[in-house]
Length: 375
Image (cartoon, rainbow, N blue to C red; front, side, top):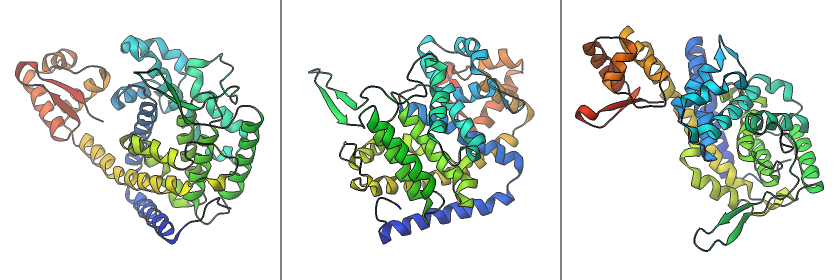
């Protein structure tokens, strides 16, 4: 059912990654529920931050963590519209679009985390609904939201010196070709995800073909990465589905952004095809196996951060809370004393403890030293 042949070498790599998933899944029974919840949040914030920054948004993870906290009350998600002005007032004007993109990506991911079972068998309307969630914070009334493209959205590159425009990737033509391709893709996915022996290759083919079609006018990259998460969550592989909320593949893709785009282009030589067997999807599979493996290793980083936070003194925790409330600026010791009303000596000691655990970063020297939250 796969459109490409798995070599023995690739099968072994898939097995290695599956074994990593199984090992992490087996370790879950030894992790307390509070820690699991914390790891899931670290992974979610990392995914939102990375996926939006890949598309040139500029918010940092600790800024996104603050937004996520504002939009989550007693474990329930609140509407972005109700808090939009307050959130935007926190940041400089040039971040408005990034805030909206973060809110949209967050909304899409929460739907995937919470409703993935309702999305099987997957329907085209589910994908369009996720696109609506992704784009609605800043394009509510646009005819593009939740609808397939009506004009070419091929990826182009502009020479800044000559002004020459070069087509980098020719996506599927708008109209009948895109609609037909999406219909075939969704039908194929529903059959393959639970019937193929190798789940990760199925998810890679599904997402690559989606990206090659580029069915929406905008937002295809973020949605495509969201669909990769959806595929893992819908998998019959219990280990893969269970660890999916604990890892951030997008965090690793962001770190390897140039390779990511190079691989995507290499799979098709920059040209959409209605015959998926003409793609070299094994290139994308090899890359994504590497990203999954590295993201599994990140779980240990999240666990160490959780342990560090829970070992803080009461005053150090109060200073940490101050940083979380002011993620947009680098704080001086004077400002921290002002915000927390703690003695200078206590603040100085707390800063040392937070720095020791790598929960904050120090910038500058002497009187000009400032601190900022690490994520």
